[in-house]
Image (cartoon, rainbow, N blue to C red; front, top):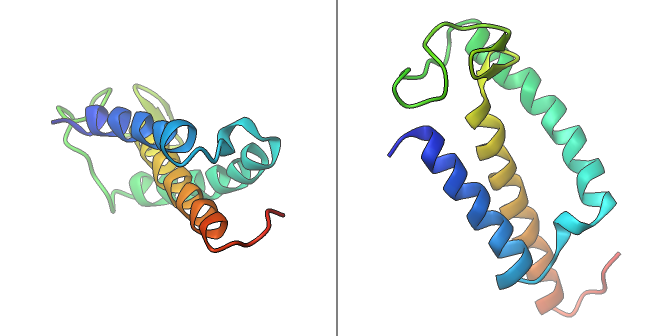
Length: 111
């Protein structure tokens, strides 16, 4: 399975967890998207630094685009493959959904 396929499955699973399983519906709130905007900014900085300097490399047959590292284009954004953004989204959303769901189960009030 390629990194592209795994990241698509991860995003779909995270959204399903948010909307159907845990029913937290975080992705329907403006607060979630504002917080995620801050997170994705720093994710791009970190991923860009690691991939732009060649510290992290990806097999070209596992990602969209080629092995040519570009700032933007050829399946990359700030040097990192676009799959990194999708996978990062899935990881952050899953963590937040579990956090909210556990908080609700423990009887804490929503902020």
